[in-house]
Structures are given as C-alpha cells and as structure tokens.
Amino acid sequence: MQVGVTGSSGFLGSHLTNTLHQLTNFEVTILKRNSSKKFPEINELKSFIKNLDLIYHIAGVNRGTNEEILKGNIQATFNLIEAIRKYGKSSPRIIFTSSSQVYKKIKPPGKLVTESYKVEPATLFGVSKRTAEDLIRLSGFEHVILRIANVYGPGCRPEYNSVIATFCHKSINKEPLRIDGDGHQKRDFIYVEDVVKAMVLAGIKTNNFISGVYNVGTNQTTSLRQVIRSIKSSGVEVKESYSPNASTGQNSFSLDATRFRQRFKWTPKTTLRSGIKKTLLWFQKEVTQ
Image: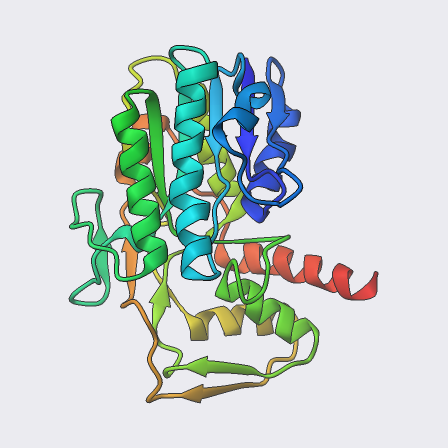
C-alpha cells in the first residue's frame, strides 16, 4: 500500500510515521514543505499525491496568528483535496486528525460527548478544523475524520501540544507550575501511542468500512490536580500555585469513543500514570543531552 503523510515532522505525525515504517506492505511517502515552510500549493503536491492509496492529513496549525491558523488548516486541506482530484488516484482514503474543539461549549460540565453532539466551535482553531472536516466530507473521497482528545506523550511541545507537556517540561526544569483556576478542571487526556494505533486501524480496515466522523478519547476525564499528583508519584518535585478566579477555557468533558471502539476494534491501553512517566523520562533525556 502506498501511504502518504502530511505533517510528518510534528508531534503526532512523527510518531505515526515511525510506526508506519515498521509495518510490512506499507510504502511511506512524507510531504516535504517548500522553502517558505508553508503548506504547498496544489501544483507543488503533484509528486507527493501521485499513486497514493491512503493519505494521513495531520499537518495543521494549532497556535499562531488568525491568518496562520486559517491557512494552515483550511487552505492546506483545500489544496490537498484539489491536488488529489487533479493528480491522484480516483479512490484514495483520507484519514484526517480533527479536534474535540469543534464541539459546542459543554453544559453542564462533565458530559460524555458523542459524535452527534452539537458542533459549534468556540475558537478560531475549532472553526478551522470544522471547516476542514467539511471540505473532506464534501470531497466524496473515502475518509475517516478523527476528533481527538488531548494528546500527550514523548516529543510533545510545552505551551503548544498539551498541558501535560507543559507541566512535565516545567517540573523537570524545576520551574513552578501556575494554574489558571483551582486545578479541579478536567480534560480527556490520551497517550500518543493509543492515538497512533487508532489511526493505523482507520487506515487499514477493509471489511464493512464506513466513511465518517469518530471520536478518539478515553471516555473519562482527569483533573489537572490528578496530573500533578501523577508527576509527583514519579519522583519529580513539583511546585504549583493556583489562580481560582482566572478563566479556565472549555468546560470539563470527555469524548465518547464507543463508535470507533466498536467499528475498529480499538481500545486505549496506556494509563495516565504510565503515560506521564514515559513523558517525564523523555523530557529528562532532553535536559541531559
């Protein structure tokens, strides 16, 4: 199978690419950015798109200016789809990494959110991901859109990919943790290897395959205080402070991944404590290098 990956140099993309290279019958092509480091134009994608059976579209912009977010998620997805139409095979499968941020602000807190929950993003990033989803859905190509919870693990970038990355990085570097809110706010945290496994299964499933949108999460929430306790239990000293009156953003909720679990025979395997320990070890190696 000819497989292409956009965003292969990023946190999630690099983990996926490493896994794909270890699989037999997979010939992997990664998309190289042009000299400007922006997502390539349609004609620049010709050599990448040609002959691909499966495309993992992971490239995107989580943080940046409004223009960077819109171009990095919407324009990039449009360019990819048009390049497939023009230069690619007639029936490739696209696996797209979307986000839990496409959902409407959750009320009341603690809700388990299914794919049928109202989509009404509260951030520009969420809007851009939702629009990219629509572009893929309207393309007519076979696709799996994965709305992923908060991914963390080795290689994640502090202040960018995950609050767990930020906490682990600061703790290893003996920097204090300053938390907006009282620390009881919760998130659905999922380890990167579990997400990669889901992505691989979405790509290789053949029998009774159905295009659509799927949540990928743990079906449970974890408070920031629990995250900090897990870091401390790994033997790392943590100094934290809280700002109870500060805004904490999205309410606590978790993604109901039942639909994906049943259709693709998948379940997350990594406990929070184990995942945080692996993440801390990675940051410790970074400090000593």
